[in-house]
Image (cartoon, rainbow, N blue to C red; front, top):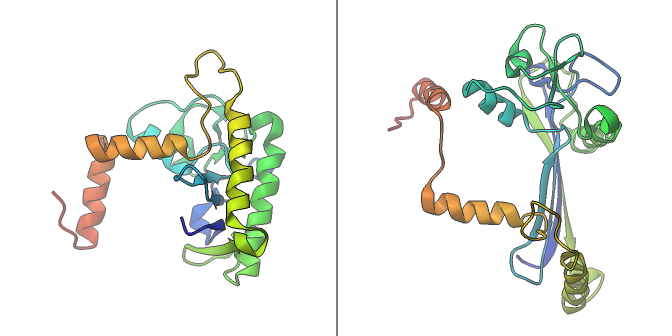
Length: 220
């Protein structure tokens, strides 16, 4: 919102976090390492991309487990590297793993991004990489780009608007109402949640209460 671009890469250090097997492997050795881009938009709300390098965030697997639901095809592998729909395998011993972004056919892409983020957010930041036997922590690399060091902000917005209108001019496919840019769905959901609240199932709420007691936080 201050006419700058943000690029954020985050890794994890510490053994408890293993969630993803390397491409071609069966045992988890990596974490879900997210990356996020924030780009100013002439429409007001920035274009925001916030994603993990796994096919799904680990938290969504945990929610499925807490609700007693199966996970969709293409999310998980069991401890032997076989596809499964059971979210509990991710928390078993030995544990299963979440597939890398791209799934069973193109998971090498998510795996490649994951390795790059480990080296950028881990080694370059000085925090270190996953695999160290120590307490769980995160390393981060944040890059801020001042647009006006490259071109006038008005020109950036003008060119961006031409591009955005070009993308949104595509005919809408069956099952879709409109062409959305990255971040637009989240912006709409934020407005809805602010108005209606956020549903939390009983199991997750009990876990929140349990941790609140451990840290001396009173929750109602």
